[in-house]
Amino acid sequence: MRGSNARFYFEFENLIMREKPENKIVFDRMIAETEAIIATNKVAATTVEQSKKDTPMFAQYNEMRKGYEDCLLFFRLGDFYELFGDQAKIVSDELNLTLTARAGISMCGVPYHAVNSYIRRLLKKGYKIAIGEQMTDAVKGGSMIERSVVRVVTPGTLTEDNLLDGSKNNYLASFCSNNSALVTTCVFADVSTGELFGSVKSADKLDSLERVLLNEISAYTPTEIIFTPDFASFNGIAEYLKHTGLNIAGNCSTAPFSEVE
Image (cartoon, rainbow, N blue to C red):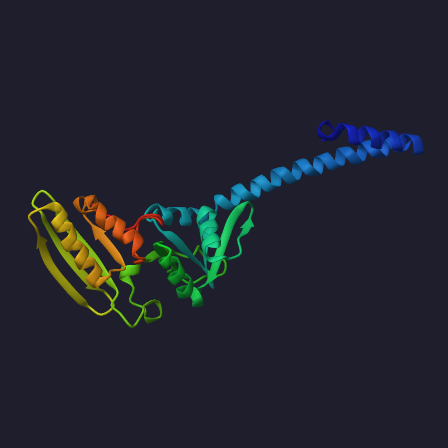
């Protein structure tokens, strides 16, 4: 402590000695005690942070994250869904919510009874959301609450009326392309109504097939697309999706749509 503030303590010591030399003993004791307190607090802060990261709850949280790396994990804690670390910062920035921290770990939460309004806003920004729900009730002095991901929410899999636009269908589209054969199977499904439409499109040239598929996409305006690798080679479709304002979900917020191998 003295080393990092040498000039300050030198001048302070000289001042004390000029006023009352015997205070030098008190001064030294005060400095020693202050340095000890600071050192203890640093250790305590580290211990608390590490302890929190190693708690059963955080072990459970980290385990749940492993299967849903491409999703924001809404982790149910009582009356709130909480997000931690980098995901807490993302949601705080995207939704302009307060970011808090405990023991150095960033946290951001939303009330469970209003969660759909936050989910809707995140879906519009291209995120997928995994809902980690409490599966058992809290028991005082009992074992830890069991939690499990009960649903992955994406724009094309919505069924809740308060998340849907009732004036139009909400289609999830699937394209299975074989570009060497110039054939693509197209399926459009509205999970909320049960409507399903399928067709097989073909053409004599790849750019012609792309135009046919673009017509299908513009007709059904899906909110989410899944597709095979060959479909990803249609650059014109990718550009169209980027510039039409369609709500296309992807593996991350910057992707125009998601890919299924």
